Figure 1: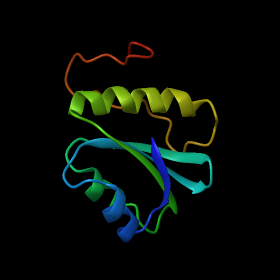
Figure 2 (figure 1 turned 180 degrees about the horizontal axis):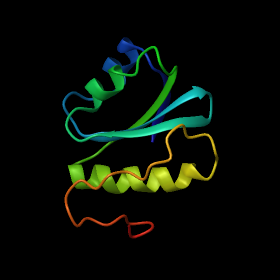
Figure 3 (figure 1 turned 45 degrees about the vertical axis):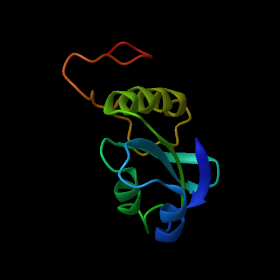
Length: 105
């Protein structure tokens, strides 16, 4: 993942490409991921919706929405055991019948 960067409009514009899918991690404290999310259409817009709620972000672009889902699942499973995630729901599949590459659900 790329980052960490301050979650403010200018750093998002400087580092995140326009209109690409991707995944992101948000944190309230350095090194402590609080939220993992994905943007199937525009990562930059999704990140900007969290400005003022979280001070730090990391991101990774993707080539497709399917790649977003796979990366989102992997990040979720990597961080869920830390106990720092605010939301413990498994990422939703990008399309019906798609299985998580980690747990198979």
